[in-house]
Image (cartoon, rainbow, N blue to C red; front, side, top):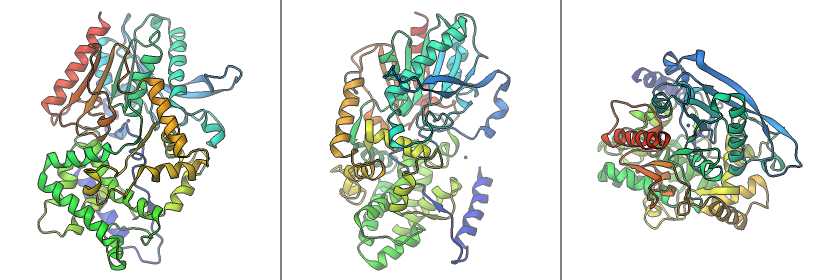
Length: 511
């Protein structure tokens, strides 16, 4: 699953941070997207304080469910408490049950309570009871004592799907009025793929699925990601795109000299000097690319600042089309504005070894969601956003800047020697075989919305010969755009897409 005043206040905080005495150690910010996952998860949730006045909290229940630790080993009798939320304010006798599946971050009551969302709008139309379960190892759902490698073996999409199946079975017993209800799984991003896969793996329990922006094709070298970032900026403005690639290529040039590296340290407000070893340079490139990636991924989504502030035109092209700034100033302005809107402060940490040590933390602490998500990329999905593309690589300053192997080497460094190039490839191949990938996902009654400026749509299912597998490709929209509430800023394409989703789902449920 962020006003002018706020920006002004944040500017004051940022200015104070920059003015701090040199002897004072600044807070370090690792603001990088990690494998395409921003802080908090890929399914953006606006702050609850901004929507709480619209929510009927009397009908929202937060609870836990006793879940099986290992669904594939009957000799393992261990269980854990899985957090979930539900809301029956729209339910009427005979109505369906909607189940939002948690993804790679904590869940909240937002998805079952806020009345303007796609899932809650559909619930009101279809008289549905709405549930949301948190994914194992994310948020407050901690199945084991720690996140050691021996325990992370219980973290997988396959286990999560069986969690959903066990949950549905239990809820049908707990609430007899749902015993014969039609269950529909929902999700966004990774959990969008989960929603489709849960329908495919358990058609006896799940009647239909709506999997928004779900990357149903696993891929080690996800070079298409940066191709879409390039294309999405270019379709907004070719002049802006020309300036952005000039910026990335200038960065590549400045890296070659000591004076250039000093300029880059100042421009990007880096905590450390830029080291010339291979891993440190690549980690630096992740820092440089990250704001551009995140802005494109969510540009225009009705989710906090991404609606109007962190958009391609406002957060990127507004600066790159400023003829009064030098190329490096334009890059600095994009980074500063991104940090400003996100209330990020202090310097940007580019310490590669520090990152690896952070990711080795096996406690359910600050690294929890990052360690869990990277584990899933190393053992199931890949999804490594590389510069290997013949078109996007040069546009981003060099095809060798971020190879997929860099990410695989991080798997080895974080989790051990068993997680190497061959094992990652084997895991990705198995995932595509287990779920069918993009081309062999053949279970009926699955809706698959995708925005075509979203880099993740490149791994989605965009075409179908099956009339009951319905891709909905939405012109000019980004990641999970259809999941959020309708806005006066919505394009006609997004409005029509939501209507199509509602019509198709109604047709299935009323059949």
